[in-house]
Image (cartoon, rainbow, N blue to C red):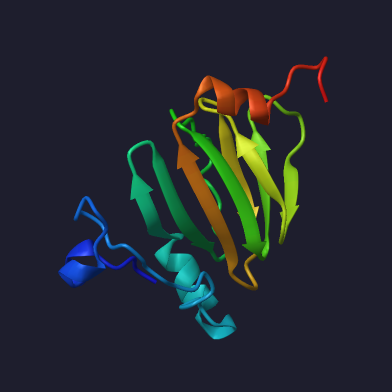
Length: 152
């Protein structure tokens, strides 16, 4: 699934700044590989579809079919990330944790800016669909995501 380009929309469909459409619709499960297509999808690599992008914010759908981060590779992003696994299964590892985390459909997590992490594995028998929100973290968001130990 590719995100429609704003230039493909009629002028009346654009919002006030005339740079983006006023409304775009899609389906997060459209265009997923079938079981028979998974070996080819694995060879092709993970699929990243940008769904929404604004200053300081990027929302993307990621489709994994057995992929993992390369050996020794760690993501270390400047922006914060909130991610939810919608289908499939995955194992993530953080550099500062002894054990990897197993994720199933419905599991979500927040990854602070600069926190080193990697994908150890994703389900190789069915697509693992992720929804990832990358954003510039402010002090207020950091406090909401990581409240002080004194406060529930």
